[in-house]
Length: 215
Ligand code: AP5
Ligand code: MG
Image (cartoon, rainbow, N blue to C red; front, top):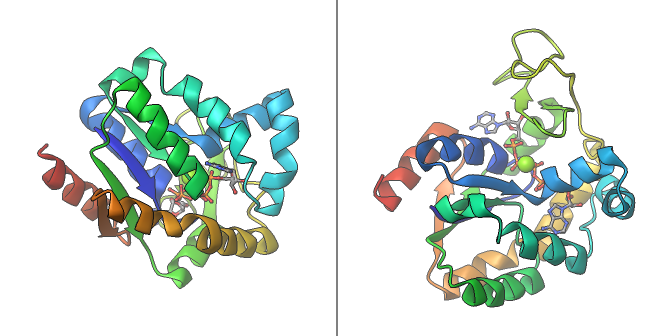
């Protein structure tokens, strides 16, 4: 499958992507995970991205497009991909359109995961993420806690709150989403690609997508 996952911070893009990869071997490509990995590794990209991310601002489009142009041409994308957190601005969406045409790739769908704001705020305050950049498993102290508090079930690293999970940064990320990313729903509606699903249950999101995609 070749999907774009749209949705506010905390809508469950990462959670749903991780379930979908198991269906047909499509890869999850999360620009947030890539950037957090770069911050942890202390690369030039990480140094440049860190302050934008911690404030809850978007990283400049040019940095993201450079990453994605390379990533989409890697071999593991041939089976399909789930774009989690990309594109995030109209400019990124326009440039992705040109890139996909150049690579002769057709998208199946842009999935809009819709979750009420109060649920989102609660989820983001209670999320825990594995700090190992190669793992980045997602937990929630209420709905999906790790077996041992604070420890990732998968790799044994610490499961922590992300640096952009302060109240100030969360509110700023939600505002940034409304201003810059929500307009992509209209962009992909014009392309005839949008499917809106209610994201209060990830299992139902996955069922609806499997049905729509014929799995
Ligand atoms: P990114 O990492 O993409 O963060 P985000 O979009 O803010 O989204 P989140 O990862 O917070 O939420 P999610 O939808 O993945 O939800 P999750 O599955 O974890 O980006 C971070 C930053 O990087 C940006 O602010 C920006 O600076 C930069 N960046 C990234 N991409 C960029 C781009 N393209 N351009 C420019 N800058 C970019 O779920 C949330 C919680 O809810 C978890 O605890 C989970 O367990 C729980 N949960 C999920 N589903 C359910 C459910 N059904 N029931 C109960 N709990 C649930
Ligand atoms: Mg995520």
